[in-house]
Length: 276
Image (cartoon, rainbow, N blue to C red; front, side, top):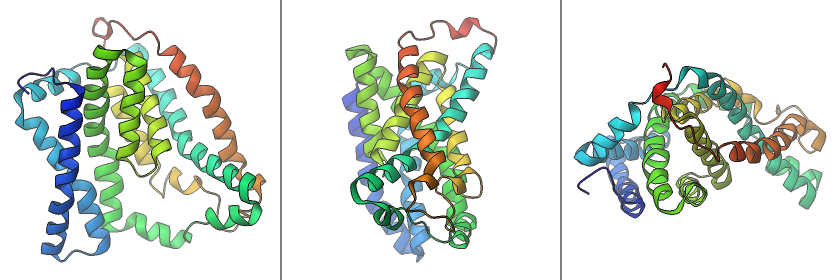
């Protein structure tokens, strides 16, 4: 890997090698520290980003490529679009909850909907959000490390390597598939990646998906918008009408996502000529 032109296969192999290495290392660190289960979960999530950043810094070609990717700012005239996409992207979590609710309601009925979609008590979720591991996971990882490193890897390196070889649609699908496999909820992450690829193409700066990724992750912290993704525990969860907001977001996503993919067919060609 002598230059910044590493192939998608090389980048993918290196990325998943780092993930595999992180598992035993995080387990060893957790045992060495005598960490609690929550602390071990945080270490397991944080360590891959540390190792990933170390790998990017270790290879001069990759390091130069990352510097080049981050050198292009968001053009001033495209900033309103970034803000609109950030707000629209926030609805994805609500849409996913609405999709789950609709599936359970259609296939198993009201009782199954209430059973499967029941969330922990509010007090428990608030306590978890403000615990040390909860704060570090949501703020440090979710709002800072994950947006920067994941966008560099998936949209900056992987997507662009595959786009040069196969075109933007296959590259978007492949990148989004890997992004989905990297996360616990495949379809939510897959759809998120579609949005990030389209945003990257339309804005011409990797900072656009980084900013949107960071904003959405932060807003989904439970004390902020995260508390509204699922209806309040006191409401009738088995009544599909309770899920009106989530179903409206699902309908919005079904219309807006294909439209944005269509708009992204022509990439933004000259961001450098625009004032930052």
